[in-house]
Image (tube, rainbow, N blue to C red):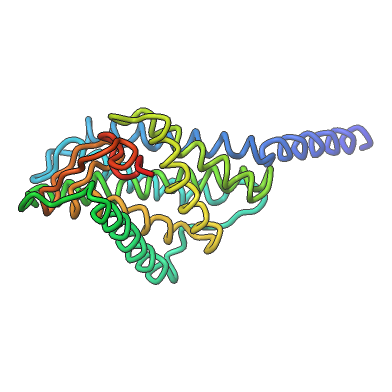
Length: 266
């Protein structure tokens, strides 16, 4: 009996040690990142072997739609349950108000930026644009980056970096990471990465800190990108767009963003 009791206590102690290891914030962070990228990979595979061609949707658009669905499902089923502080930052109840506020804020903020650029003479409308790619813009430029990037940078990285090092460390580091990943975009530069980190990372991180929900930063992110590209015809983080107007950015690179867009403008 004593031997069985000793083995039981030893097994319980081993399980507790493993539980402490798995629940350590940086370990939990690594697990969540692996789940996230597994979901991104699964989207490519599903599109390749399962999903038939869908009218009006290009291959990229199909992958983006599938990825959004898979990432949200994985977040709901697994990621939100990880760690010791289990919580859902993507709650459906009450999501409408922060999402709507985010969409409105993103639209207004970027409109103010364009107004400032126009006042300085670096932004001008040359004519009517092309709105034929509206669906592509909504999916690939607004919905997909808003969901995928906010889930990664705020829903995963911010959450467990904050648990490990505090809110300010999480805000600064996720903003730096957010800017750094955009260095892979067309016409990117150190100034562009800094602009994304300060203008985007800090703003979106603050929106998450304020609400402890992903809906507000997702709304801001989606509307910011959509307004930038589809409405004002300005490159979205270096990516070419076709806006409702045909616009030009001319002037000093520090004001125009030098091909990257106004996100790289002072």
